[in-house]
Image 1 (cartoon, rainbow, N blue to C red):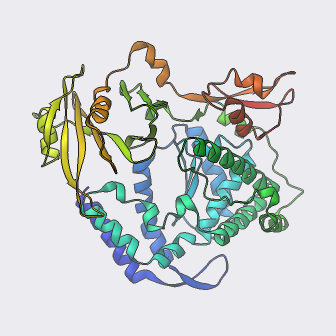
Image 2: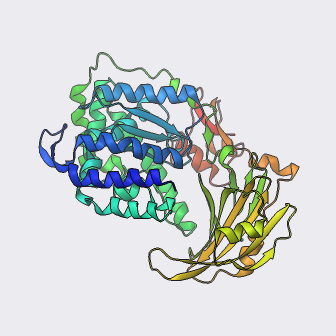
Image 3: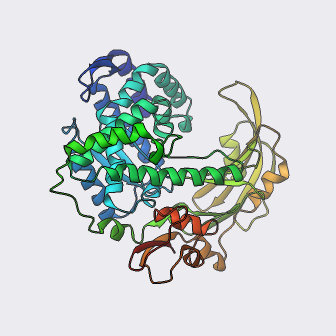
Length: 482
């Protein structure tokens, strides 16, 4: 971690000290405890850089321009049209959208897969714009005061980049939301912005219903797999069709719509999402059960049986079924002139018990190192391994609340190899394909043709807004997964 980044976060710490005050909310017109607009404009670009280090922009210029165009039109009708708004489509399978102070809004292709028309996308973008215009991030930062930034500054100073995330500074609001009151306010603001652009406000309730169905389905899968579910932060326990308060808030925005100038659904959304990646992208690698395949890296690794694999932009992590043990792979630059074992000794002062890996690679070595736990201060043993491939090093780390068996770790490290020719197709991504439904088509029948290994019929219903019991009608545009 560079000293420049450390200096930037320390600067943010001082900004918090000097800029925290009561400020006028542009939505309500009331004075409230929040960071100033100067703070928002200062830290927003810094947070944006951090997010761009954690995510990749989806490589589809036409779709990027489409998302930006909708966002700019909505923001122009908001209470803060003069912000330099930035709208980014992220190459992530997560079902998520979020915003940070200063006018930065992010949409994942993962959440777009569950939408079926432009008004759905406008509703979600409008909701996120609402968080910025109502200054929810500035309020959260002021309430949290300096502690979160001080912690982040210390984390950067110790070189632990993983600890420096936006969610620390805003108290996890990006993923968990801001609470019922502020989320409802964003729903109402989003509905107002889409109404001012002549979208039907009922589509706001529609897209929230779609995402709620996806959340319920994902929660069932998570429970079956013994893990914590993830969901879009703008959802609550009540389903939208039963949430009277939500419906009142959104219906109130109808007054801002010119019903004589409705926005027609010209099918552009469906056309542009035809061919969009679904699930993990080939550029980030594909997990299948406990195995991982990556075409560009020519890489295969197998984690222990029944372990769950988390494929993140900067790392690949296998987690044991009970969640007490983990093995993580990261990429690093091989140090010129150092063998794999000397590389490990240069990385970990207490490296010991080394052994060579029986791999087809030129250099492979593994052993044990002792590190200090930054939270508890206790010393802990971790398993470490390095695999050299030319100028590239694959660093593998293993640790657990309970002792991680040597052989469990070494077998995983030993499994790393190049792809076999017949495995190349396993490393290919799935894509959305839009078809026209024919007479007799059912989701059960279409599921047999879908490139989905689990719950194919349910997933097709979800991405087509016909969950749990709908069926396609002849002539209707339907999304498949190929």
